[in-house]
Amino acid sequence: MMAERMSVADPDNRVNHLLLLAELAWDRRDTPRSLEHSRAALTGTDWPSLARHPDFAPALARHLFALLETGANAEARLFAEKLQTLGITDPALAAACRRASAGN
Image (cartoon, rainbow, N blue to C red; front, top):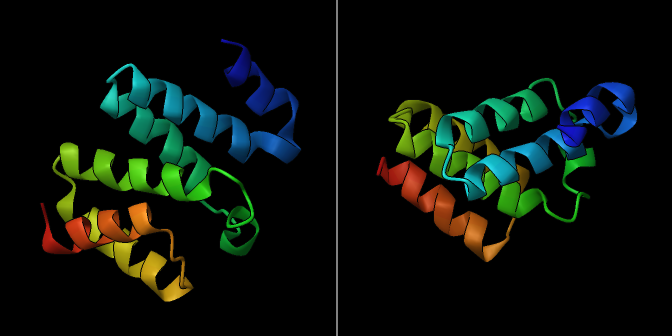
């Protein structure tokens, strides 16, 4: 897939490419694959720089929902807590954080 090759060939935009792959997998209802790509994108990422990404909040919400759908409730709760400390205020992301905090 072109986006997978781009994440290697264009390391400056690796996170963007991986988030795109996560979104595509989510749209195809491939939750494990979506989670794989979003985890790869978020691992070791500089959160303030990612916050400037135009699709950052929806990507984070998808990541939280994927965690919940795969039963990783504790990980979702910890991730939501981390997001809340960053002060990200997108309404959809805030709703995903509340759902993750509730564990469902």
